[in-house]
Image 1 (cartoon, rainbow, N blue to C red):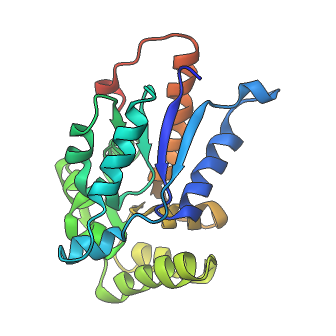
Image 2 (image 1 turned 90 degrees about the horizontal axis):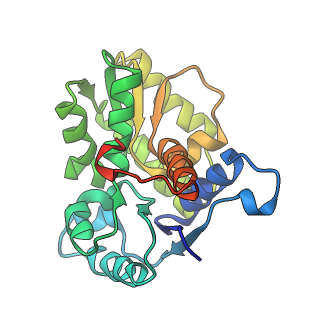
Image 3 (image 1 turned 90 degrees about the vertical axis):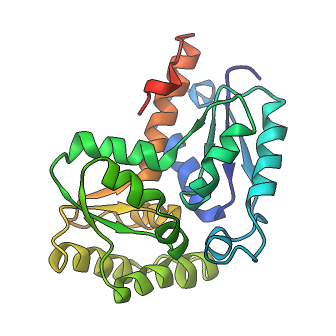
Length: 244
């Protein structure tokens, strides 16, 4: 297979499945051969990203991801995507392990938000790990936005939705998701809410019928994937420094 890309996923698997569903659903097709060419690495046994970021004595997710990237680099994909926002904590180290471009999911999401909502007050909801490592916070502030992460009750409710409902039970709690968005909008006056976790992207895919503006990194990177793959098939040269 030539001119393909690699997806490093499994963090978690339902979120990865959601991403694959999005690219399959959104790719214009009339026959099997119109779908995208890619390799999916569903590495579900990668240690928990949040646990390690909060406590570096816990197993690190960096070595297994470096191993995945080095293995995939031998196959020469055109680019790679890591379907986990929190894993971008080690983005520099992961990119240093390969010459293959790795698309930076949080940076892509915030650069898209800058174009669509240039003057918005931004709310960020994510795992404790993503909040602790400032992946999105730094990107959002560097882009010039005013932002809030809500209060501790919202953070706890987000963590419960991600872990208790989606990761552990494999279920989508629509009421909890909508309640989080409503509080961020009504109480914290957020014009747009960044979904800083792929489980939240999974929630958005399953329950998009709400009135709130969201920036869904997984949806955005799905669209970018299709755009890049389409250019690859046309043999167009891609400047990966200018895709954001």
